[in-house]
Length: 256
Image (cartoon, rainbow, N blue to C red; front, side, top):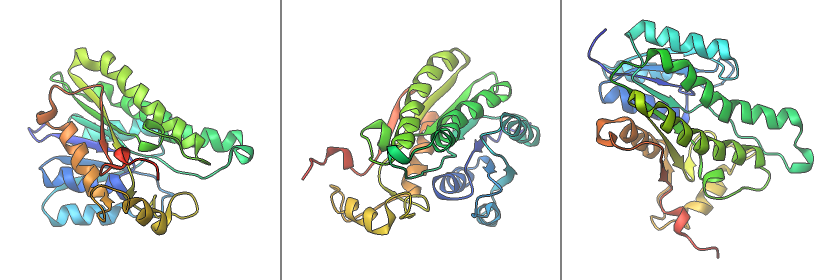
């Protein structure tokens, strides 16, 4: 075991997860990137960037719907670096479905990945946190945390549930020195949000960005990664059970 701190990130092959992996590696952490093998994004590209900058990282396949796979991922990460100091529960999917078309299977898939997957990841990490404690950062969304989104009820419900989970785990794990917080991204340009079928697409992102107090700046995955890095750091050592909104002021904008 070394003095280098270690971080485990689910959904680390693209978007916010990949940006967080690069952010933590650049700050000197050893990074365990969890990726879904069916995801079209290649984790090797993230590893190449990190290793090219002299960072330490490894990638592990995991489906957060599968308790056994999640347990194996955390065990493998802990075996490689001796412990798990920080967990970033980021894996998630977004699907568009009007309520009349929303099947039980479609509902359950989003809840299973976006909410239950967070629980599975944190639960599997518990044996590997050091005695000094550590941190958990879960990725929620402004959808569910602050407002709803038509044709995305399952996604909003999952992301709202993440906040309740975070608050409860902060109480439960606090005595062990484990801080649990959430980051709440607003409109962020990422592979997920650029999907016009299930999300906003470029036109929708540009439309929302134009409303921001910081317009015409668009939110980036690096903006969210920086917030995650702060919540995991010693600078946030007395912060737990809360959520950090990263939305460029979107929540302050009055309806027009």
